[in-house]
Length: 172
Image (cartoon, rainbow, N blue to C red; front, side):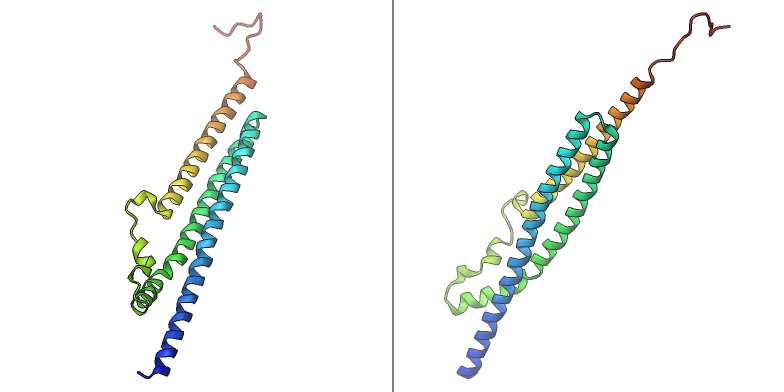
């Protein structure tokens, strides 16, 4: 390989590494935005639910909680897709980092391989994010059930017990 060919290959690898890091950074950023938007929407849903319950609008509270659960599941799907997009570039990054480490005599530059397997599963972003979203979904469904029960109890109290009119006998 001539010096010119070596320079072209090194330049192509630098461009590939830059492209891979840009891809990774963009989709990792999107992933964090999805989480941020989820937390904001969850807070709004909880505020709407709480306000509805305080105003004894139990049916509205049920609707808000169920809608919140659907929104949470939608965010879970979005997070899953952004995770796939982040992971799609990791093999290329690992290869390029390995080559860079050899050329620069810096084996520790291979960051992707170094952090690929966390020591504890519950420390992975995907585990924490999914656990958070599933917990939110379950919480919202429990909240919907509680509001439904409150709505049923309120309806029973409004109807009251059957009335007995004086002078009318119900027994024969």
